[in-house]
Image 1: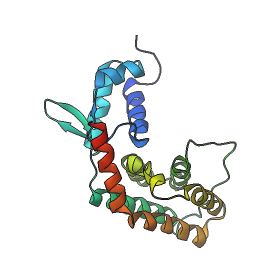
Image 2 (image 1 turned 90 degrees about the vertical axis):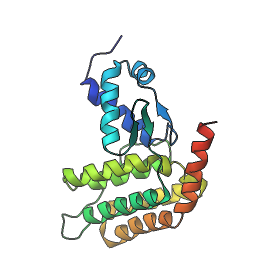
Image 3 (image 1 turned 60 degrees about the horizontal axis):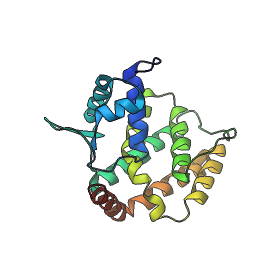
Image 4 (image 1 turned 180 degrees about the vertical axis):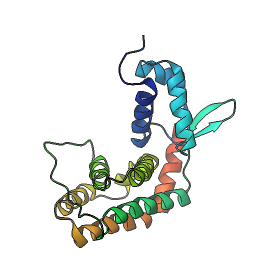
Length: 207
């Protein structure tokens, strides 16, 4: 029985975005609208509408007569998404804007350092008050999410990196900008390895 609450389309869209960002589905995986609708206690219609929206954003791929599949990022896609991610943050931290600094979170815990940095950098963007910039950044976060969940296989120091970013964000300024830049450049240097891991996950999913 479908549950009442916020508009079903927005509930479905928010849930799918979160699941895709968390890497619940492997690249190339087919999404079953009916099964997901049952999990969300919604009808299949708003779930399909949400999938169509995500296909329009490039997060999913719609195959005519077959349904919706998780888009498979190429190495060029991964590199471009990290660059867009960095560009958004550099615009947010531009000295011509109101200075951005982040107060320490109150009793906030995260499942992983990846989730912690996603939250932190998302808050940096939110403080700009720019809906356009936030929309671009959030889309990038969603598309990069599955790649970022593979980072622990390459970078052994993600917890220390997340802690350094959180500390830097509390003061802001040029030192924090350099931390943000370094965060992205080290990942850009490992795009091929990240792409290999993503390909392997897709093959494993397909059996």
